[in-house]
Length: 132
Image 1: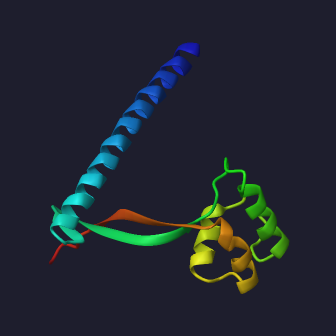
Image 2: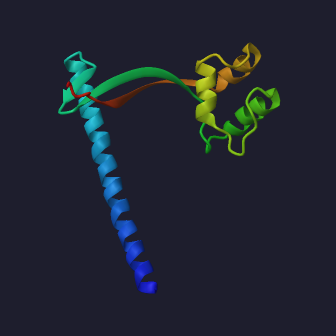
């Protein structure tokens, strides 16, 4: 029994390491694709049976968990009662609600000092439909 468990643990660690290396490779490729696409002024790249779509947008970000201002943001939002109570405070959902103007003007004004606008770029993979 212990041998099987050790074998499973070894396999898990093996694939975890592969996943980390793959993620680094993907991150590097993403940066290179974005740079080359900007040079060529394109946002769509066809490759085989897929198409990469490059999307750049501005998003509002709030302080992360380790940031001391995070507690103040949580307090303001919970006091407002505008977002449903959750076990975990969802900062991404708050940023989306802020960007989509789903929060009251009062709450937006209270949160504004804690916001930071950042530009993000992501690559979306879309499968190309086969023509019959």
